[in-house]
Every structure is written in structure tokens, then in C-alpha cells.
Length: 150
Image 1 (cartoon, one colour):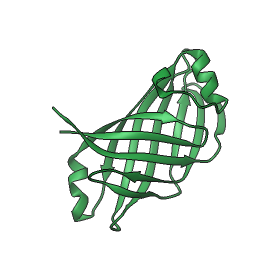
Image 2 (cartoon, rainbow, N blue to C red):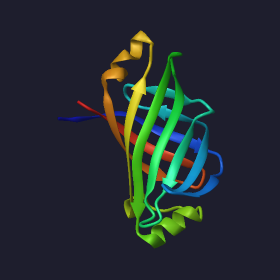
Image 3 (tube, rainbow, N blue to C red):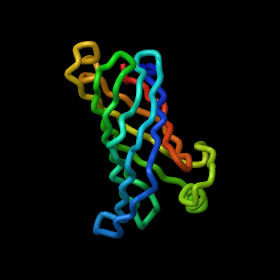
């Protein structure tokens, strides 16, 4: 198995909407307001309207990531992207992230599984392709580099 670079995603976000505690943990919704993606096989813009339906787990502070978004490629194709993953780290690092501080991504673990869907013939290969990504959280965006599993 090999990893091949797919694209670097820069996802711009609205402020966090905190829905409160449930039996799953602290539910938060973070709306996606746009962004870009650029790579050797895939580039374009992230359209507004998606979101991250995130759960913060009270026992260890881990965030379960669950995003859905719509992408438009540089040549006009529309793609659906869903990601699922986890972000966790030491409590003091997670506090700094929550406070909006710039934190070196090496200080915490943020990994995603990426799944694509499209009806556009030029990108149907994505329907059969799994990708993984390593992410970083900034105060106003999420940045992740995605790799296909070949």
C-alpha cells in the first residue's frame, strides 16, 4: 500500500455553535463558510453550507470529527466530501486550541478519513478511492493534507 498526495484543504469556519451536553458528549456544530483545496490531482473551492457535527468527549477531551461539504473543482465538477476522524492531545494543549491560540500541530493528534462522491465522469475515480489526512486547527480554519490509499 502506498500513499499518494491528493490535495491540501483549507476549510474556513464560522464560530462554534455549542449545543450542550448529551449522552454522547458535548455536541458542537461548526459551519463551513468556504475554503480551497489544491493538489496534484484535485483543486478548487469549498462551497459554503457544510459543517462539522463534532462531539467533545468528557472523559479525555477527544473530539470526534464528522464533516460534510460540497466542493467545486477548478474545472467545474461538484464533489461531496465527508470526513470522520479524531483530534486529541494533552489537556493544556486542548485548552490553548479552544482559546484560539496558534498551536503547533505536532503537539496534538488530528487525523481524518476522507470519502468522496460525484457523478462527474472526470472524477468518478474518487468514488472508489479512500483517503486519509493529517490536520491542524487554526483560530478560523482547519487545514489538512489528504493522501489517497493506493
